[in-house]
Picture (cartoon, rainbow, N blue to C red):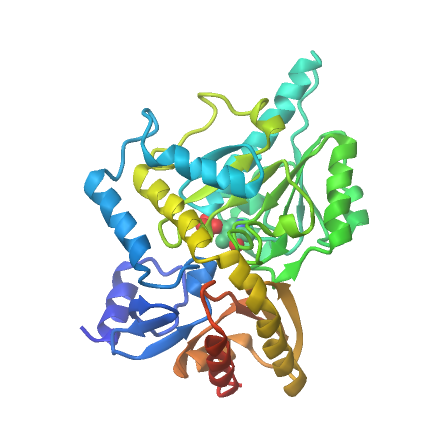
Length: 401
Ligand SMILES: *Cc1c(COP(=O)(O)O)cnc(C)c1O
């Protein structure tokens, strides 16, 4: 089949919930993708910040194949071999205590919200009061946490929510990087504040250090839980395992997904000791697939390969060069306004031109980049890119501007 056939067949049988770019990818190698017509693309999107290791990493592929030949799925009614190792590695990397594996970032958010509400529920029971437990959540405007009814309720984008109301109740919105606006939403019913350490879909906005520390202090003072969504900015993307570690801020609950399995669908929410000891218990939460041997073998291998390939150090070392090159573009073109980001999660704000047009043009020129928000070019390459790849990206992008 030629690419037009794949596209027609897709439109015929796949529910039209995406406006896809007219490219059919067939395979990948390193940081390059190849479409069914044999054209090569330099990949600065990594399947939306997922494929951190690059394509065709033989050790990763072999680990998955070996697990497939042993067993793929057992259910959570039993123990399995790869689960404890994957959980231990994620707990250690996050600095938190207990892990629940899910199948996506959205489900990680759902679990995190339930854990927070259960914590508040038990706290209220302990006080032996008849009052309803604290159930309110404070979320951020322009946040993104997923499309299920709970995750959508804390996603600060009225356009996404509009047709699906009423969503989960008890959510109040504050402005990201505005501590006073968060304080203004606190009531004696607040159980948690949820935010991304670096807002991704909203347009690549890193938290200000004072803001993140301020939210942590506010939560400590009021006995409110802090949930950090590191689905996109975590797993080495910013040069540390999780972005919050660069701020010296530890959440009570963290969510991970995207690069966690490097392409195998897996997410997780991770609880601090304090929350783990006083929230979800058997019967409260579950998943058929979550934490299955196949997904956990992937997670475990991802952690091993990050260590072997010194991924965190590599991201730290190459970030200044990437930032320099992006800053140079901002200096050169007057419709490129500002660069923001951390590590290999960068955005350039575009003014007076549709970002989608630049993304389409880049694709024609063999470069995959993505947009974020309504006017931001997003750069979330595989974490194994080298200096030459950055130079090549700049060449292909400039040809598209
Ligand atoms: C992508 C994303 C999600 C949702 O993850 P899915 O795997 O698509 O369900 C949640 N939060 C953030 C910050 C994300 O970037």
